[in-house]
Amino acid sequence: MNNSKKGMKLNSKLTLVTMVLVTLLMGVFGGIVFYNLEQTHIRESVSYMQSTMERRMDSIANNINAINMTTQFFLSNAKMNEVLNRAKTGATYTTAEWIEIYGTDVAALERLINTNPVINGARYYAITDNVQEMIPVMYNNSRLQKQEWAGMADEGGWIFDYRENIFSPGDKKLMALITPVDDRANGRIGYIETSMQLKDLFPSLYEHIEGEVSCFVTDTGEVIFGDAASSSYEAVEAAAGALARELGELEKEGDETGIRTEYQKEGKYIISGMYIKELSGTLVSVDDISGGIASIYRIRRWFIAAALIGLGALAMVVYMLVSIVLRRFYEVLATVREVRGGNLEVRTENENRSDEMGELSYQINRMLDRIQKLMQENVSRELLFKDSQLKALQNQINAHFIYNVLESIKMMAEIREEYDISDAVTSLGKLLRYSMKWSSETVQVSEEIEYIKNYMVLINLRFDYEIFLSLNLSENAMKQRIPKMTLQPIVENAIIHGVEEIAEDTTIYIKSLEEDGDCTIEITDNGRGMNEEELAILRGKISGEIPSGGGSGNGIGLRNVQDRIRMEFGEPYGLLVAAKENCYTKVCVRIPMSYKVGREEKEA
Image 1 (cartoon, rainbow, N blue to C red):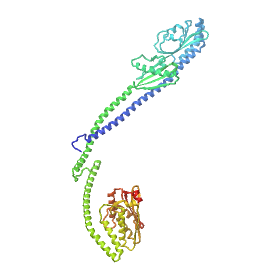
Image 2 (cartoon, helix red, strand yellow):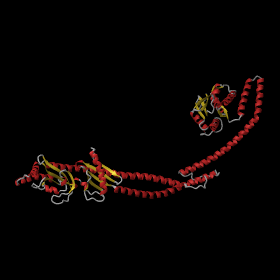
Image 3 (cartoon, rainbow, N blue to C red):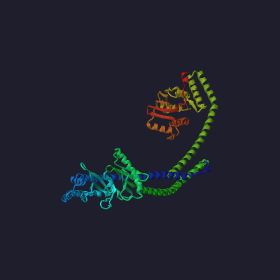
Image 4 (cartoon, one colour):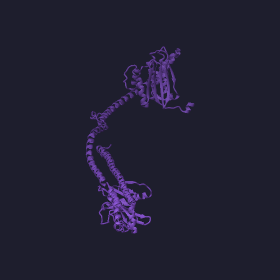
């Protein structure tokens, strides 16, 4: 890397990345928290308004029942109906009769009104002025005409938002059920007015709850507020009218709408409507929760401000901590740069620390130690290789002389008819020729087997007993290439450490197995075998876990075979040893299948 290239330093990058992650986490966390706060406030407001409207529904239903029952009681009074009929026909009562009516029927009706505190009043209106007025129950037609609803009397039904004008303008805002009274013979004979104060029927119109406004919207579109309209009611009136029309249409279609409560995001208010079928109108309450939501937004702004201040302070702390940590990293980096310049003697000074940078320093120092050791081993290996080449050259120089001498000895043995000596000399010559020939680092398994055969001929000359060689090798296995002198040291090891100690005729078995693209050559002797402890030691020496010393039986020959196989084919390949005491020893040589006999070659 060119040192002239400038960029953001690592400590700045780490600080930036850390702050970005912390900011994202805080943003996500804050967003979720404040969103949930807002939604919780909305849900609680909706739930509260819904339950409030349900309570109001029960109260309104009871008041409507009280008006209807009072009206039905008035309609069912026969004496008062007779008074209305006589007023229509012009008939009169005597003073005594009027006193009796007043003392009985009128008094009963008056007691009925007084026992029901929600009823403002209930009275009859005669169709003419030909009637004796009995306040507060019976009034003549001229009193009727003073009422604001006089023009709608014949239609009957519910009348809202009016003031009583019988004697003088009243100060109470009333609603009433106007019921025409008809006689089968005389037709319309009067009217019954059962009234109630608006604040008793709709208490919510007069409750001064902060942020909440209620109104009653008739099917004709009239919007009734409890107090004088103010500027804040205009938006409420529009929203209430829209909801009332919607609920009214659903009611006409036969849909039992009940109470509908919802949140209006645009105005940040809760609107709840309750259609009252008996009154042909909708009670609407609007609760402005913008203040509560604004409070949540205000807390959120304070949170953002505090978070920004905290992030700034955290950035400074993170930058200082990262700089402290990276100071050790830059020391290690300086060491690496010196190594790149060729100085392998340099070492870092932080390896005694207990943190990760100490671990990194320790590993770099060990790596440099290993590099130096490998370089020394490579130098030694090169020297050994040169020495081997020199010895091979010397062998090549002396080979012809040795072969000529052996041929002379062979001819002398044959002349004297010593054919065993001649065959032994022939085997020895082949053995020496194979040993001295190093034209290649690897040979075919078949060449190694041929060498082992000659070796067995010579080795059997030493003993009074005979060691047989059993071969079971596939054609593919015979064609595989292995490092030279791989199998012979194993056979020699089997004879010296396995067979010689039992001193009787025995057999060494060599067979091949092919599996998953690999070839395994097994060399088994029926010698003395090994116990578990001896086997574990031998395996340790072959793997290098246990150092191999000098002398017989130290495993250095098998370790050498293992190393050469792994140098040629790689780590997965090498030797495996199995044994059973007083039974057998088996050495498996695992190599890759680098050659396969073709169909034409097999057929030939």
